[in-house]
Amino acid sequence: MLRFVSSLLVLLCAGPLHSAEWDRYRGPNGSGVETAWRFPTQWEAADIAWKTNLPGEGHGSPVIWGGRVFLLAADPKTSERMPLCVDLESGKILWQGHEATGKFKGHRFNGPATSTPAVADDAVYFAWGTAEQLTLAAYDHDGQSLWKQDLGPVVGGHGFGASPMVLGDLLVLNNDQEKQNGFLIALNRHTGETVWKVARKSQRISYSVPVVYPHPATGEPLLVFTNWTHGFTVINPKDGAVVAELSVFSQEQNERAISSPIVWRDLVIGTCGFTNNPKHCVAVRLKADNTLEEVWRIERSVPHIPSVIAVGDHVFLWDDSGIVTCVDPATGKDLWRERVETDGQVFGSPVSDGSSLFLADQSGTVHVIRADGTFGVLARNPLDETCRTTPAMGGGKLLVRTLSHLTAVRAR
Image (cartoon, rainbow, N blue to C red; front, side):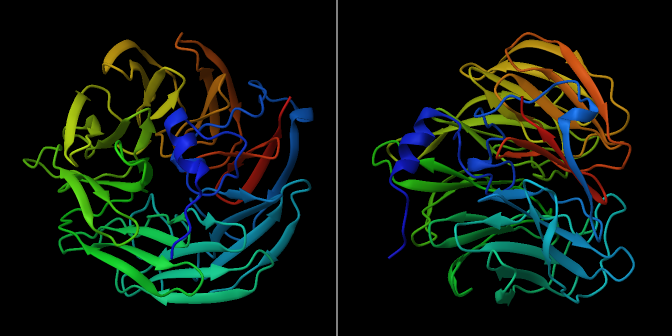
């Protein structure tokens, strides 16, 4: 019998989860929002709690649990993967794993340590991939290896980049592949054994991480995935059954779902696109009869890589070039659209403390704008190192992982 936290449904219906552990990519249910602290907008030396030199490089984001930070690094020459644990208070590296793997072959903007871990109360889960092998690995919080599973080859010109998430006793991963069928998979997170596996038509590799969404009639927790071919897919996490599916993205030109969907009230909002091809931001709603309906769509200034974020009654689309669009999530209507001058392309996604939005560009400059629905640039904070990650928040710290460093900013 799988364990599901009963309070999860109440929190999901209420909006972003607060004062919870930052347990996956973009924190609780992938919302990117944590309002328990307020962080400085313009960072002074006194605001930096610590800056840790990491033993390897990576583009994956950190996760936080119980005063510990977990992230994945890799040796840029050998591609050896290094699961890491860092003390949240001091920045000291508490332990470091060593996983000899095949050489990474992929896109110049990707790397061998791009996946964000998932963490629960008793274990942390890492994912990495080569052309020959996709690995899921479990460690306890003290660095003891628990299990590893080989999920087969990774087919995709950009290399591997998907991140796992935990729901109850399940470890869930989207493994959409390129030019061959992929799959969605759930493992027993305690043993690594497969619980269910769902075949996918996935002509383009995608990296989106699913969200948990309550069934409108029963309140039962469901998983919602996005990809180009299938659009939005709703899965029953108990058995992997497809509850509903709606193809909403254009099939006329190549696209991929790199960003991850979010939940706003009874809507799931996700994006899909490809460089100069059309990009779409679509909101859907699951009805009591297990059908999905499209509620609205946006096709201007839609991000290709960054995920959207909802703060209160506003949804923000921060695209790869720096254009920010503020949307009324009830209607999909634009409230404003403005450009934030960045120092490079944007690969990460914004996060918010409820007052401000924080987003790092490729140069390592963290841009801060207002999150109250009125446009305003508050600050630019250069970290002076390549950054393709999403910040994390927990324990009164805002964490930014650049290529080979992890920086912690104190809450005020």
